[in-house]
Length: 237
Ligand SMILES: Nc1ncnc2c1ncn2[C@@H]1O[C@H](COP(=O)(O)OP(=O)(O)OP(=O)(O)O)[C@@H](O)[C@H]1O
Image (cartoon, rainbow, N blue to C red):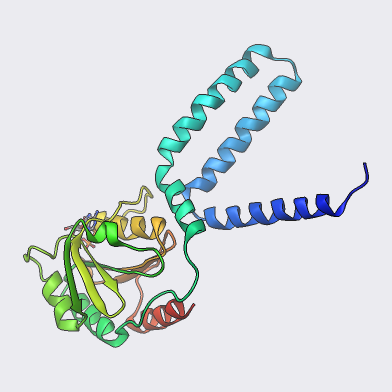
């Protein structure tokens, strides 16, 4: 059968689809899943090819059950994936009071006030804001210190920035499953960055170190200068 332009288009689109899926999954647990599924399919294929009927029957039946099990186990990743596919395009964030934010972070870090701050971008974080207290207050360095002052009812949990407003505080973020040798504050920052496009800043209570979680990756401790550049760049994109 001759190759038509439709076949070429078909192959091209499938290629692009796989390329984007691969990019979306890079650095997530889902990549291990894909490798696992590929090994499974190869073994299944070989079993059928060699006529190993019991093994191929077993693998065939387990595949149906396994598909449902995978949907349950990888529900957070699938959710993150679908969210990224459906994310609206356009400006990523309204104006951010960057210098006020950096000043606040500097104070939190000096004083070792543990903090977790999510900068909302295209993914609406309303459902996480609803787990805490809605503040809708103009962001200031002093407000940040007040919210994260140890012992206040709102210091426990994460805060959400929407543009130049501190939208909510005391919020519960989803915990990442990744093993990284850090506590729940860092796991919550990473977790939220896995299921949304938020930039999540963490200040460690133990060391005062500032890190940034974005797209399922947590940075090493970074200086305020580096964070300023990173935020400028990310919010421009
Ligand atoms: N799911 C969550 N969402 C938002 N914040 C959370 C969540 N889980 C824990 N936290 C915050 O993390 C705090 C516990 O931090 P923990 O000491 O376990 O973390 P850590 O990563 O070791 O950070 P640190 O270096 O600050 O000690 C809690 O008091 C709470 O404020």
